[in-house]
Image 1: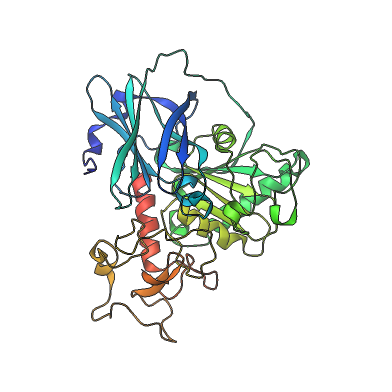
Image 2: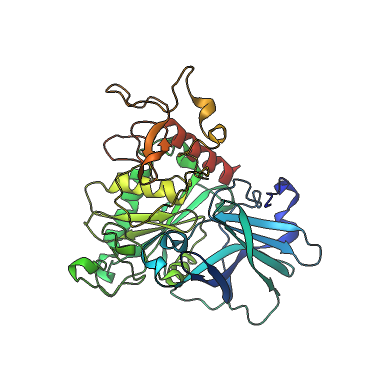
Length: 415
């Protein structure tokens, strides 16, 4: 059984770490039934944007979990939950027929001493299983500090020390050199849009937003369904997993190389397109287009996934994923439930005598309850309110459960 440590305060940053980043790239290979991990490269990067206080992740969010132990004492000194494209891909039809290899990355503050890293993956019962381990010798000459894709940085919002703030790095996709001024304006628009919505608005002083001024050879992004192909710096594309509006990239290394130009907790890729689309994966990266009429709501919806671990609450079956949420297990995302362990979700927030499940009535509005239809399916998975920014863009705010989850994550990063 996988147990989370509850003693994060015992891991002192100055005792164990140097203020820069250890980046570990690895390969994640498999199909819908199996997976395999193998090492790619270990790098040293100049900035550490994460907390120096919250070093052990106790949230229990994510399909994967990374742990780092001091090799001589076997002390857990860092951990982090996250998701990756592989987990979504394994629920596609393609994964039933073939295998794929994805490149993925874990980062941590650079350790002073040799470490052992361990990678865990949730099995089909929702339990973390150890899949891979690797020893890192911190003085090894194979740890490269070579920089790829070095570019200047634009400060869209600076509120203070990176160690005490949530640091978002925005990466430009499909902006040419002549469009860098437009990218800066789009970053300002992103910041303005994010802080239009609560609870971000009341926590504006807890964020830093920086942007990397990295041009692409061509403007736009790939749209395979329309036979449009663009030469861009991160190779993004609509039709990810053959879902038209899903806009992602498989080029993890370019994403990480660009992000390394600034300290970061979260990576946000801003794509130069007016076509509706975007995507996000928890503690991996988020994407959205810059010019669609719904851009601000796309920003915050996708950031809800990437930053706050929120699930999609819609149930229209418009994705390429199949059966992502087994109905006999409670999802780890805070804003959906199968009622298997509803007491771990928003049960304690419900008004007295709320029926479970809760029928949708004409005057339900944002009335908190347990409404069927979420997680891409109409039956068996439930959401907190009839509507929310994690369900549609008809409204202007997050439901109370999502708002609470976002605030919890803000506090987790900045306490």
